[in-house]
Image (cartoon, rainbow, N blue to C red):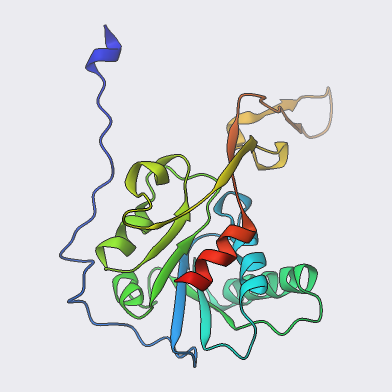
Amino acid sequence: GAREKLRVLPVCVDIDEFGPAIQPATLNTGRGFNFLSVLELEERSGWDLLVDAWARAFGTSEDVALVLAIPAVDGQALQAAANQVQQLLSRVAPGKQVAPIQVIPVGPGSANLANVYRGVQAYVQPSRGESWCRSLLEAMASELPVIGSNWGSGAEVFSDQNAYPIECDVVPVPATALPRSAVEYDWPDDGPATPIIIPDPECHWAQPSVDRLAELMRRV
């Protein structure tokens, strides 16, 4: 049957590109211990959970910084992302002095990602859902301690023997976070079409524990 003919091939990581021999990037955070997360500022990536956990875990007096590497095409997009982070901080930790969070671009014209991995001391990715966890694999190839969601593909590539898994609940995906394929359109006789999001009760993702994430970052 067709099932016996299917094979799942995971993504590959070039160990010559990512490894301890790579020259580290200079990130200028002003701190001695830096965490890195490569992500987009979208609900699936768990960036909101990471910022919340960071605010719980570290104050300004501690010698740590969090570096968020995001795809940004220009300085305006980078500034908009930094503003999003500050707005979230003001909601989850109002009035608290939090250890610095630095937003940097990845992509053409920015520092090579392999060098960025080597310029930090740990990698963290509390994603609600990943396909192959490429950045976690790249971080592991760069010999970094990694913290990641213990669900989905993350559970396939690491364990408590070689990483710091974050316990997760499995919850339905909110309708607002469903992919475009889950959207239908109402076509009126006149005027533009109206998108209608179709919730799928079978669509689930992870909800990593913020408290556990904060605890693991302090442990690392």
